[in-house]
Image (cartoon, rainbow, N blue to C red; front, side):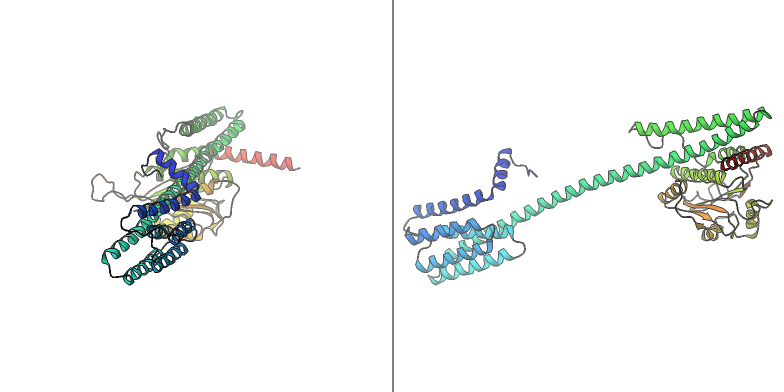
Length: 473
């Protein structure tokens, strides 16, 4: 830190900091020279006289100051002893007083605690006692203690300033490291966010494109109209994925582009999403419970992506098993459950039938769909979570829920159904007495899949299975 000093003074200070021995020699010379000057200019021998012994004592005190950095307490003791010798022999010189002040300054500026004060007290009492033995003289004792006190206080002030500057520099270094760590953390979080978006967007639409193109190839000759409809779904899915990828690319290329530019996919697009899976041949039943309302953007997006990824996995891995989706709106929570397969998947009373029973009976247990938010707890306890998977879909869903303060469980229930259950915190609805607020309603709607789509999807799956079996043989 520059402390507002001029460049010339900073250069001088830097020179002596890099060469402390030079500064010690200079201090010794200044003390010796200043004390000698006072002796020469004093009248009537008040500052002592030049004798061989006084010069020897002054020289020893000046030489002792050369070791003041390494052994400051010992230097104070040596100079105090020289003062005793000079007082006893009557050879006192100003060099000794200047040297003891310099030694006390160094002790205070380098030793923590009260060590310097103890040294100052010992030196002051010794010199005061010597002065009193020569004759009571208050005019000598007061300046003596003033000089000792000022030297010690100056040393403590310098040490305090030095410690303060060191603490400020350390905080600056820590702050810089903290900024770098925060920048790395933000980069890592942004990479995870982009990875989740790419996985959810591309994975979902590529699955639909793959399925619809296979359906089109299967029915091209026997039902050209159905093939044209499937190719229309392919084109629509292609346009959608390109639009969302362009949005991500704009965010990456332009730092001023907001991360959520343009309309964001949310639960208001849920009917469009389920219709796409219905057209692809997924038997899907949709239930809504509670009071649907506008949600914050991040929660709305997370809920949509969780549903999208769960239905994509159900379509890829459940092999046409009935799938049930339930959205339950609570006062402070949104519950999402997607259930596919299970022991009764092949019968006419699949997950949907189980869910209806749960809703009528007032509770949900193993093998049931939770129509109400109050039933989510029992199903959540029944889920046996799977270990690490090869893909990133379930991991991404858990990260989305955790980032918003919610939780997500994915795994098998005792009846063998694969269930994804998420609970996300949401702000409470408006006042119930507000006329603008709709009353609480329970809506249960079923997405019925066209028989042709189911048959076409099953035919494609059968053809793929036959090809795979032929390849094995």
